[in-house]
Image (cartoon, rainbow, N blue to C red; front, side, top):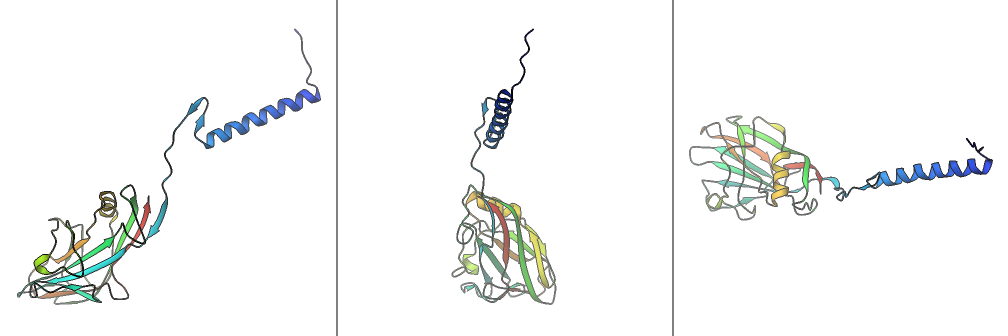
Length: 212
């Protein structure tokens, strides 16, 4: 058997080859390369956060053809002479969120401020709205359709916070999100729940963490 001693030159060459090989594997791994296989990865999603633009409106059975949109306060009422509902909507596709249907919600939290109650507090239920509406024109007689099952309910005064990740994520992916209809579901006892509206300092808001 012939044994060859590693001369300084041969030793340096061996070390250089080992370093290059190791660096090549690390470089390949960073691009999804393993051994002789090439893996095609999709472009990574962009993550961020935003507060989608909000609009709201009160619709009143006692004034069925009058629009009460984007006021400083909105009232949900159960009254003998006719109820009042409040619509709350958020623009997910427009500025500042600009979310395409290929995006999604990692988390979404809705905040509503209840400024007062009269003959209450009653339970307010939030039903998903299922057709378009505009805060500047919607009335009791032109109210949009809404689902039969609420996404959430609340009562009392102060700040109420609800997780709404699932409906917001679905709204982003469908490209159509119409918000919620707030209805007094306790009973017809002339109770009034007053909410801080669009033109107030504490309008309804959503803190949204997204990917797109």
